[in-house]
Amino acid sequence: MNWSDDGIILGGRRFGEGGLIVDVLTSQRGRRAGLVYGGASRRRRAQYEAGNTVALAWSGRLDDHLGRFDVAEARRERAARLLEDASALAAVASITALLRAGLNEGDAAGSNLFEATTLLLDELEHPEIWPALYVRWELGLLSALGFGLDLEECALSGANDGLTHVSPKTGRAVRGSEAEDYIDRLFRLPAFLIDPKAELMPGDIADGLKLTGYFLEARLFAAIHRGLPPERERLMLRLLSKP
Image 1 (cartoon, rainbow, N blue to C red):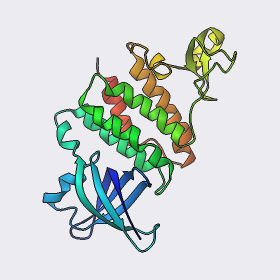
Image 2 (image 1 turned 120 degrees about the vertical axis):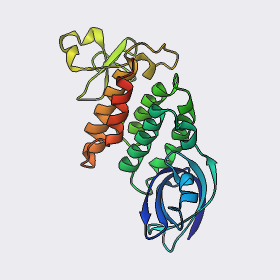
Image 3 (image 1 turned 45 degrees about the vertical axis):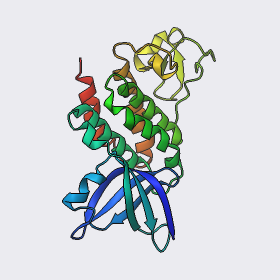
């Protein structure tokens, strides 16, 4: 069996003397793994850095077996461009760790994330843009994997305006005016998550990360009996430490 596709490198582990088992997020087949002979060599290793996009061909006896990757070329080598930006590198680590831990191999939902992940990775060279995109990406990850939040209308009144908070129990939006008695138990909902034209305000990134992080842990990773990847925690600490 054989197929070809573009894939975002999610990581890899050494195999044998020079081999590398590479995890990728493909555009058509979700998350897949394959063996690259000689992939761990110093000359070739840079091509398989997490966050790079490569053109590859997979071959194997059966689709659910560990097959072999032949990598034709790098479509985009992002890691080398971000070496001087520790926050962007932390974002790459978090993105790829969440995808590796949260996606089953071959899960079709992974393909739905390819375009959004590519867009986010391409914007990591722009520090004024990517943190907000990252929070939106985590919200999209929850939705793509069946754990999406309901931010369309107020859970209490049904109104679709003035939404300011999210219930940790239901994942539904709430108007602050409707929930004054227990607002301290809700997550703040940054306006940029429901209105793409909204101005980014101080504290929005922190509040967005707390919101998505809670539901990633309580819904997605609780369902597979795992905690949040440490890479995600490190990114949050780094972003929250910025003035």
